[in-house]
Amino acid sequence: MTSGKTTALVSALGLAFAVASANAVAAREVVPFDGGFTAGTIVIKTGERKLYYVLGGGQAIRYKVAVGMPGKEWAGQTTIGRMEVDPIWGPPAEVKHDKPELPDLVPPGPHNPLGPRAMLLSGTEYAIHGTNRRDSIGTRASYGCIRMYNEDVVELYDRVSIGTPVVVLR
Image (cartoon, rainbow, N blue to C red; front, side, top):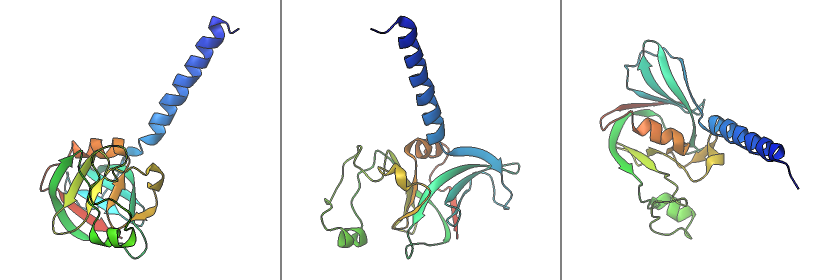
């Protein structure tokens, strides 16, 4: 039989662990940043596996991301061309070729590789999006897209709009 104090202690420890875990998951922080980019620009440094949202005044929000696997890296300048909430995912031809067992469409939900938000990049086949593979964040895992923790992609999505400049550096 447990006492009320033991139950309270277990509950408090569980809550503390949950809060610590949630804070560790949100892999974003405001950091010094001076790269000559205007406020509101997204800068992705694939070598660091980091995405920066430039705030201006020498600061940016830094997010941990997954980037293209070896042979799938790219660099360049583009803009956000389309934004989707709870996107439906259709595997690109290259992905479908490598993984023919994938369905033609994946509806929104926990099995969708795009997560809860997607920002499609103009003139490319790539997007900045969430993920159903949290363990891939911080690695070279994608076919060229930029994966973010779902909490982070929702937060970034709310900061940007169609036309937001995106610069991808190696």
